[in-house]
Length: 325
Ligand SMILES: [Cu+2]
Image (cartoon, rainbow, N blue to C red; front, side):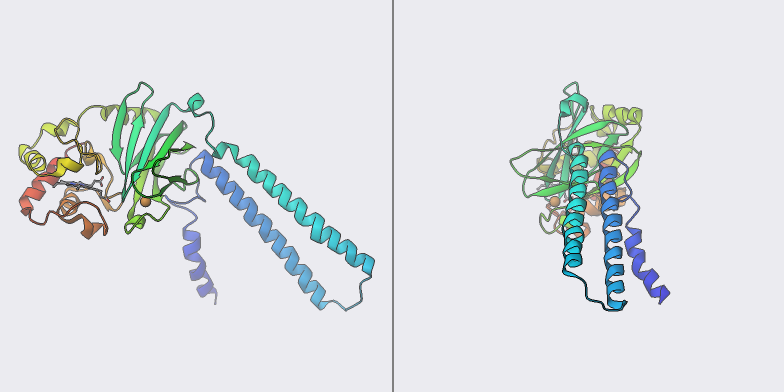
């Protein structure tokens, strides 16, 4: 019996920690959500325990009729005063937690604005620096630890939802509208975000890694992305193949004539952790497989297959792309 119970709670406990857990907060907003969760859980558990204990007591004690006056008092205190007090206190507590979850006075304290555009089934991520420069990336989010960051969220097609459970609550990305979210990451590390609104077949496969970095590392990373990757000039064959096909109609690579925007920006693709919005580890082999037939890795992917390309052409392209660090 104990073994069965243990096995039953394991998966539940397993989700309490890890890279995508709201109960393992690594940010200011997520910590507040977790606090609210624990207060609600412990509070409702305690009330449930008291009610069950009273019910057991009432069903076991010797039956004696209760006077009308006692019954009236019981209903007044336990049925009216108690719930009203508890619910009012909980509401006040939840409202008190809310203002910091809501976007207000962004300009005052957010140095960095990150624009996220949801696409079927990937994320465009644009960093707007204080000096007006823009850095375009995709499918991963990098943030400095200890600094408040403003997100502006919108969508190119369906309603998506931007959610990094370890850092804060979720917020919808709605076509034609910009939603704002403010997050303060407090612990460096690698976390995971996920689309949290059904947006089509590959909705569940629309994730992204989140890197919370030391501010100096973050600035270094960002600066390196304001210029084309050093790898752009390397390996003429892979580069010629990429530019010779139609890849550039959908993808942009800084420093080349590939300037498409209906697919993820590939300017520094080689340095990204994953491919296909968090689906597979980014290595030359996976890159080749993704180029040849992305929907074999990610069913529903909106990128056409290139099954006609010879294997060594694909390998050359993958090699060149991996070099775009
Ligand atoms: Cu989505």
